[in-house]
Amino acid sequence: MVRVMKRKKRRISGTAEKPRLYIFKSLKYIYAQIIDDESGKTLASLSSKKLKEGKNVKAAEKVGKEIAALAKAKGVSLVVYDRGDNLFHGGIKALADAARGAGLKF
Image 1 (spheres, rainbow, N blue to C red):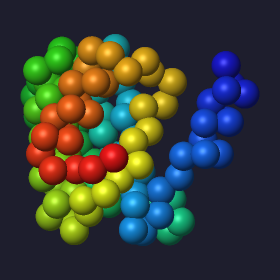
Image 2 (tube, rainbow, N blue to C red; image 1 turned 45 degrees about the vertical axis):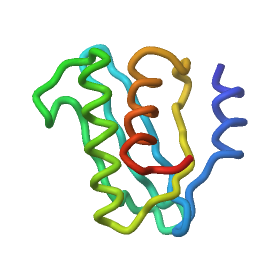
Image 3 (cartoon, one colour; image 1 turned 30 degrees about the horizontal axis):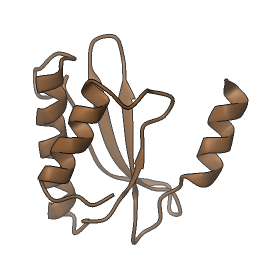
Image 4 (tube, one colour; image 1 turned 135 degrees about the vertical axis):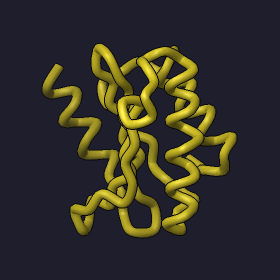
């Protein structure tokens, strides 16, 4: 599994014009970060823990909307979506759909 993740990471990286939207899901919460890999800086980050939500689909939708708003405030509208090793369903899909609905393009 580690080789597969390394192969994905080689293809997915963020730039200043098109940063990476990274999603991490723990057992309790869901996290989202917008990262510029060239400079090594996190432009925006948010989690359902900060929003006092759990790890359900509604919490993921709320995180998606809020991270899109934070990205718009930083002047970012185009991102590369990085879901890590998570499958694209449930909370991961809900976060992506909410971010797209709020104006992020990926």
